[in-house]
Length: 178
Image 1 (cartoon, rainbow, N blue to C red):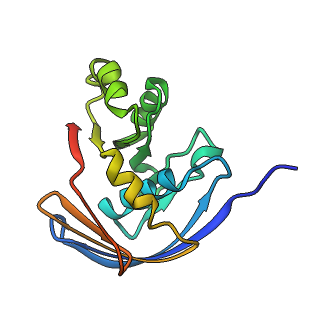
Image 2 (image 1 turned 30 degrees about the vertical axis):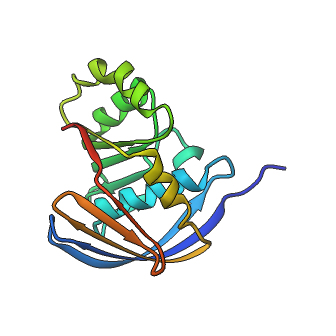
Image 3 (image 1 turned 90 degrees about the vertical axis):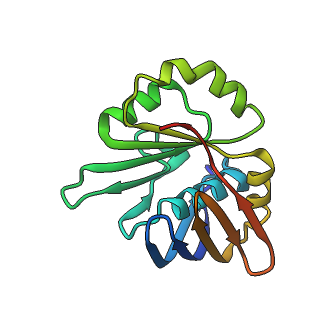
């Protein structure tokens, strides 16, 4: 018998002064059985950094044809495809061909090596942006994971503050490619 996804709920308040986005978002996050708290919270952070009323979580690990997050217009066309982790070039090529813009948030122990190995090949994707998250940051985000969460995210001058009311994680995603 296959294990089902674990459901997490987050009330996320976003104050993004860089983009002028101020809103509360009620998130329902399905965490695949093989997904870690770290990856799930990187998806939540990516949501906060790109928050929009139309931004949605994809099926993620359970579907290779869907993004971790995506923003579709009213016709169903994908305007923004957001991926997290260390995907292969083939997946990114597919995302770039299906979306007007692609943002990738790389993280983990092997993120710097992955970037060195893939940087040259990814330069040809014009509408791909790549951001790096430090390992200590993503581990601190993972420590905020709860089945029910009250989170606040403030973004100003490229810096983000993520808080659950008791703990705060401060970080600046490193721009690797724009």
